[in-house]
Image (cartoon, rainbow, N blue to C red; front, side, top):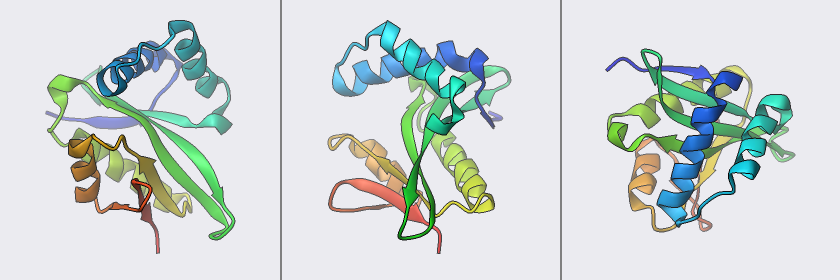
Length: 150
């Protein structure tokens, strides 16, 4: 299956909203307020300082999305990017889509002078933790995973 990664645009918002609703229910048994999640997703498209969504597609079908947000590091005098809201459609999991998205974002981070990548993961999500470790990320005492450019 051929996968392409691209920065999301406003026309992707509805599928991203659906992904977020599904993820909240799947991972934390939470039903999100549709009005709030819609406003939250569109807020990112309205103000890029809040973050950037990326999507993985096969042909024209969006299979996965993630959000990159920014943390300023005074220690490194540069930004650290945070992976948030990572969701892959269940029927497409374990096919290397996250790996491709991660490598795409890591390459972009290197080219843009970003100091590293971080994410947090729900403590009981052992499959995700193994995936992140396989990408070369390391867990700290807060169960936060990061990759820092030398």
